[in-house]
Length: 184
Image (cartoon, rainbow, N blue to C red; front, top):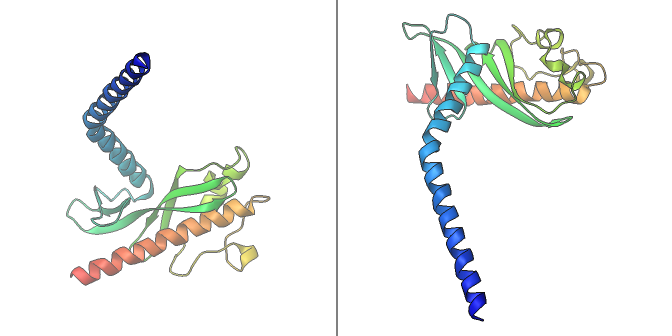
């Protein structure tokens, strides 16, 4: 019985020390990790915004959404992160660049699990360039679904998911623009 109590106390002390070490490690590294993650998101936004964007700022109240401005503060474009859970390999997460009139600048992949050399063809210019300069006011769809985007051969699910991500980003942009009109 005494040995059991010793073992329990020993285990409890080990757990307590481990919890304290984890807590301290989290406190020490949390801020730095957050800064690195934010810098990575801003670098992704830079990939989809025009070069005329000299200032890239997070949009208050909207997670992973950025506004690109000239050095004089004039709004040039928006970078919006969105995802779709229905890619062939699961979630596809993109950051999409939009002009204020909903013209698509480009997109950049943040996360995907599509098949290498097949499903990930949505990253190649042959597919991605179809979206460049398209106006996304109307939802985008594949040709097989009555839209104007040519799907990747044998990767229709992935192609459809990319359209869904861009449509989701457009909806988020609409929320942002509506919110900015309300605050004016």
